[in-house]
Amino acid sequence: MTDKMNMDLVSYDQAKRELKRLWKRGTDFLGSEVAILGGAMSWVSEHHLVSAISNAGGFGVIACGAMEPEMLAVEIEATQALTKKPFGVNLITMHPKLSELIDVCLRLKVHYIVLAGGIPSSTAIRQIKDGGARVIAFAPALILAKRLLKMGVDALVIEGAEAGGHIGPVSLTVLAQEILPVIREIPVFVAGGLGRGDAIVSFLELGASGAQLGTMFAAAVESQAHERFKKAFIHASARDAVASVQLDDSFPVIPVRGLSNPGTKAFMKHQAAVIQKYRNGELSKEDAQLDIEHFWAGALRRAVKEGDVEYGSVMAGQSVGMVKEILPVADIFHTLMQQAIEALVRRQQRISDM
Ligand SMILES: Cc1cc2nc3c(=O)[nH]c(=O)nc-3n(C[C@H](O)[C@H](O)[C@H](O)COP(=O)(O)O)c2cc1C
Image (cartoon, rainbow, N blue to C red; front, side, top):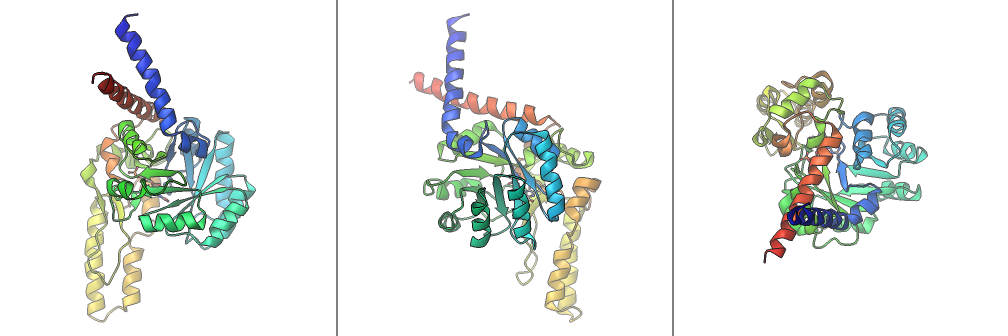
């Protein structure tokens, strides 16, 4: 072995140790080897994908979405049958049966519950913590991060507007700079637009404890999404993943990022037509708002399960441009780890060259 090869091996091992040290807080918290969560994706994050992510060393999260408690129990048990590694369950705070869903998680010994879709109530947080599980919540601004910390959440995800699915207005670059230097008490995981290990390292260096990725896993081999849904991811570039557009301030549209398709164009026309009907006095304001909201009802399921990528909602983050082929989850993790370690090797080399 040449001296150069020997030195490369030494620096590779050092970089590996450095990565472990950088995200130790995240791995200690999650109980996983790698501090990368597979962000819950409604209809996509079911037992096959979730267990594959946990088995590959990451932390899978089941998306409960609109599931009933009985269905969630089936999904949790199916995941437990496929992995002994830790995983979490993502619950939407406005689900009418939130408390029952929490009970299902606690009864089935799920130790991590991610509360999404708005600021969770103190009651929900208490119920989870009293049941012995940990609460992870989303903080879309520093002020809310501080509030969630006071409310007793155990960890935060800060998700930038680059992400797929429902999004806030601020990019991860800015959220990270606002929140990471301030919130030190609990682990903070970064999300939105992440597709490479070296980029994840840069956020670890800013103080993040780990990262959450969704889009990069949606088209994995283990994802049960329809082939057409996966192919749409392979063919898309970053600029195709656009946020939904609101036509009129009086009729709010919840911003969702997904691939632009004939459905997203039809949504614009639909809004214009409904607003016109309201102006003509043919619809009340409430009915017009409901009409706009109902446009996308069931549209994510149609895209993911039935492969309707034309008129369904193909939720995807801007990182979709980095999804080039349908790969096993383990390969995706391997590449992310290689990129992270190589970034740290390059840093060591820069320092030793000085
Ligand atoms: C198809 C899809 C569905 C999603 N559904 C949910 C959901 O049900 N609950 C949730 O908290 N986040 C949801 N997300 C967000 C992801 O959990 C994750 O935070 C996000 O994908 C991270 O950004 P990235 O897509 O750029 O990696 C969804 C994202 C996608 C792409």
